[in-house]
Amino acid sequence: MTLLPPNQFRKVKESPAFPTPSASARLTHLLNRFQASPETLVLFLAVLIGGGTGMGVVTFHYLIQLIHDIMLENFMGQIGIWGAWTLACVPTLGGIIVGLMRWRTQDFGPGLSSLIAVTQGREVKRQLRPVTKMLAAAVSLGSGASLGPEGPSVEIGANFGVLLSDVLQVSQERQRLLLGAGAAAGLAAGFNAPIAGVFFALEVVMGTTSFATSAVSVVLLAAVVAALIAQIGLGAQPAFTLPAYQVRSLLELPLYLGLGLGASLVSLTYGETIRLAKAIFAGRIPGFDVLSKIPQPVQPIIGGAIIGVVALQYPQILGIGYGTVQAMLQDQDFSLELLLALLALKLLMTALSSASGFVGGLFAPAMFLGASFGSAYAKLLGLVAPNISEYMAGPPAYAMVGMAAVLAASVRAPLTAILMLFELTRDYRIVLPLMAAVGLSVWLVERIKPTYSSNSNLQQIGLSELKDEQAEILQKIVVSDAMSVEPKKLPANLGILEAAMEMVSDRTRSALVIDTAGSLVGIISLEDINRTLSRWQNYPNSGSTTENHGSQTLIDICTKEILYAWEDEPLSEALDRMSLRGLHQLPVVARDNPDFILGLLEREQVGLICNLAATRQVLRYYLPSLPSTDQVINH
Image 1: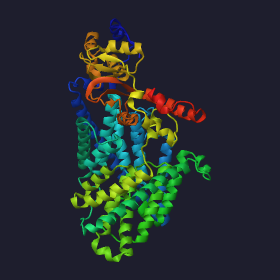
Image 2: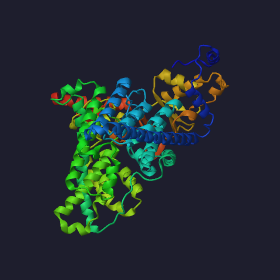
Image 3: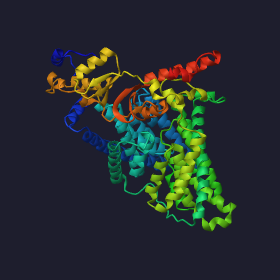
Image 4: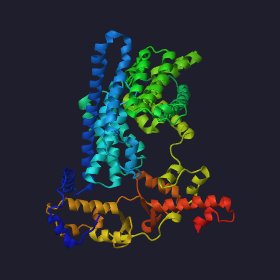
């Protein structure tokens, strides 16, 4: 952005070539007029996100039902007279429609994981197509693809939050907060479970359950509004009508631990099967190279045809599967052989649906797998040890706990799964078995296939694939080894234009904002300044003047809720904190006095330090006389 002297601002505003403010700019200007309290504005945005997400989810569910009626009632009513085999035509037709949509749009836009990466600054934004993706998901689910509605519901809310943050040009930290609010609203509306939606946002999307009260308030408000609108549009009933739970004996608790053990294996198999199926369709598996030559718009047709053929024998695997899950929870007659067959086939058809290009979520299939496994587990125990049957609850109880255990291990969100099932049952008696099974399943999955390691942190700061011994480097470095001891400091009462010119002159990305006593009060980045200057340029006729602009100082636009680092803590812990909010820098302060600045930790500098240490460690293999990594770092 080109900075102009103050006396040239009026010339720019009077220039006929200066662009007229867009609709998004006018909305930003309107909201900024009410920005006397930034927290009030954020709460207003939470209501807006909750309302928009709730209406979007209601529309999405009506679309699924409409397409389901057209496909399985009207269409099948016309061709069903030809024979039962015509059922296979329904998911095939759905694959054709989704394939045509993929052919026209090429890309439905990023999923939830990509949206999270966007807010962390690790990915270039792509054009979002939330409406097209919602239509594709409705066609996929309505025609029988073995996926669920919760993933698209969460993405509807997340997309709404991201789009709104783009319109308002908010900071990256606030964008992440609005994304979390949208995700919470989506899950709350999709499951009619606002508490689980809040914890899903905090636990999965935003990465922690330890947040400022203001952040939690925003997520809570969005989830409540979305759930309220969903109840008005879809009804107040929960997703499942669950049976009454009864604790027969405390000796039954070890049986639930066994259920948790099995659930961890089911969830691991679930995840690996989906990854394998995607690799097969991408042609990365030897022997399946031909699939990579098939155009992507054709792949959903292949997937739909296979699903249709399997559904001829096992129609329970079609679609979301809530009806089958409900039947298991009501203890309808399912043989052990049928339960095991449904478990295996649902797993395979879900992987096929996801890999072949159908659009949908993985929550509902995980719950189907958990209910099938839980019911089969209870029936198997009854066959193996008939004497313990009188001390056991019925198969529906194990189906309920199995749903939560497989879901928690699949998405690595134990609190979300526990609270979701508790919201559905509203029964405290199930909590102990539930916590035992969920806790064990998630713990085992994390031990077998951890989702987070030092390697992922190192890759985020620019290191390539690392061996285990190289990843240990991060554990040996403390913050003081990588921080800048002379960070840029700017007074809080400095004008925006003066600060911008000073940061451009010093070629610095960020600066610490200090008060007259030299204490840290905030942090400012070039993005914050450019955002403010863009707002000024967008309102040449708003009545504001250069003098008004000059009255704004750094304290008005800097980030005041700051995360800190300490000079003696491991660098890996500080990087965790940076990744949590998608930050590029952390002030380093004294432990006994957080206002006393010791330095600034920047992600780019951390990447350089770690790369140098890794290179030196490799060099020591060839040059033993070279100083060790610890000596070099300390030096």
